[in-house]
Image 1 (cartoon, chains in turn cyan, purple):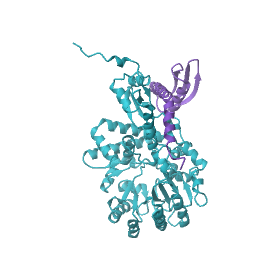
Image 2: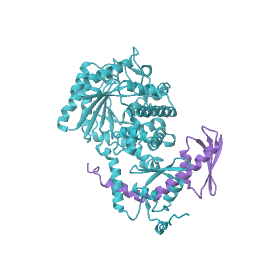
Image 3: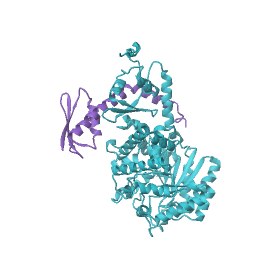
Image 4: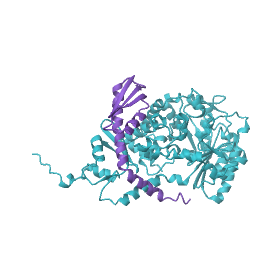
Length: 487
Length: 96
């Protein structure tokens, strides 16, 4: 006999709950993904989403309790001031990075380079062209400006061209910055982004003495690396691998990191690239898409389709998960950053996924010629004749003039997702960021039409897939957690 | 392939329909938009497919989604403003 008890009469009374702000997306014929400003999310059936919005949910249902616990709704048992305080505190915490302002300071000490990479995004100059080196006078101005940033942590990254071609300016900057920091007492770090072809004992001794880290490029096995990163002698891979070993032997095993750039050739070889990283003792890899700037967008040789890159990325990620399941620990860095934003408790500080955009706020670029750029990509666009991301000239403009100019403030304003068309109602907004340089390069507009945006398509696809992987397989979830909880 | 998408203005606001048409940029090129008494008709060319049924189904799904989004946004507008105001009023950004 059916003897299920009647529901309590109270559950049939009209609900007294109110909605808290949330965003949604229909993800299938039957399900809707919802998320809120705490970063909480749920997948609901279409019936439940209608009941939720029409405020007809049964108040003793499990769903009601979960929605309340995750701050999608509140009712008369909640203290409204507490709810508002909690949500606004979370919003403030999420945006805490803004008040620290610029932490990453990129010094382009030379445009000279002895490589001719297929995707080179800057106007590289030949090795003899010393007019493309940063002078000490300009370097001093840049250091001055850097210390005007209120950030308690400063990272100085030397880039090029090949920065080691102007090593004396690197030495000058490190020495002067440390001298100045004796008074400033900031947490300061130095990184040289180099192809390692020119690294020698004297350079490494200096790096050791001053705690300078090394970041290099490793595009994959030699047949990919040498093709992507051509240099006379066709030995760029050998130079990079030998350089990595040399750096480790002098500075320590973890003092060198590597980044890869994806090209049409790499798209066919995700496993080989990952294996190359393992073979060289790295426990992480960043499967990066090629950016649409500089020579990369002008040439057809490095042209690639986003769908192909996504296929490459997911093949790579699947392989990395499989390796981890077999006891080989390796992390994919882009997934790690996204997972940290969705499930972690801290903002990663990754410049390309910040809202408002990280331009100038998180990173700034001092070019060899004293021009200041809001980002490295903004500097690359200059090589295509686009100057809008140039903040000014550090020789004759003050910090306030450079960082509070109308043009720059407009770019930042147009990058705020809460007021961007489409983004303001997007269910993935909490995890996403804004990229005015990308949208200007591809659409001629700082905000960009998101239905045509590769940035939007790439990130939305990754968010959905990573959530699906995290939710549907406990072993994968545990691997992912080991990536973003490592700190 | 040329198709016609029709939205009922008794169910969806004009702004909702236009948002959806804009969001379907990867799928369609809009040729024309006609507003009748209670309907909006969109003439469009399919970009990468010949499946008119799929495009109509996507259009309808996006209309429902957009309407849900607009409803939530409208219902939570006041509390959203309150949260933002509270968040920004407790920073030291201005003092700095």
